[in-house]
Image (cartoon, rainbow, N blue to C red; front, side, top):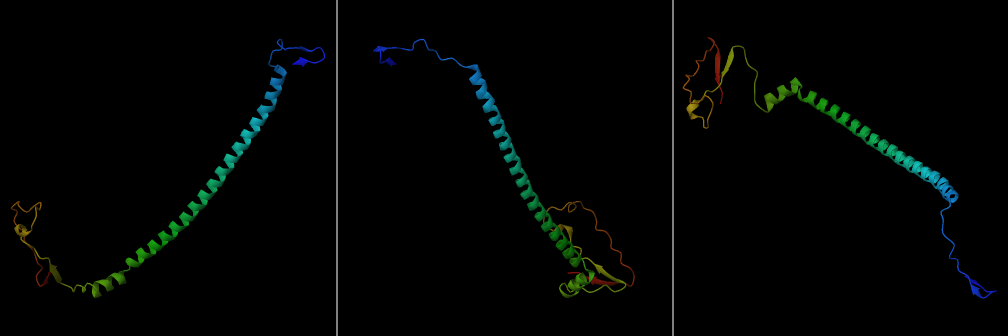
Length: 145
């Protein structure tokens, strides 16, 4: 700096920068509440977004639950329809060509020779004699094919 009146340049060599404790405490007293308010607003925004996300998720789960309940009701109805004895009887008579058994009617299954069956069966090589078949006297025998 220059003093123009005297024409002498004065230098401020003796001036030193010092930290003023009062100004520093005023700065902290101003900044700390602002940081606390900003943190509170940030936390409030996060909580609010979480509440909204949980609301959407709850709504989606409620819709999924209703859909699953409708599917369960539809499947129960379909199961009951498929278990209907009249329907089973109709399919057995029409599609499979079955007829009801008559009294004293016996259907004998066809017994194959165990050695003629291909593959390794558990009892095929054991040498056990075939069990004798008992047929009631007077019973009608219908061979199966």
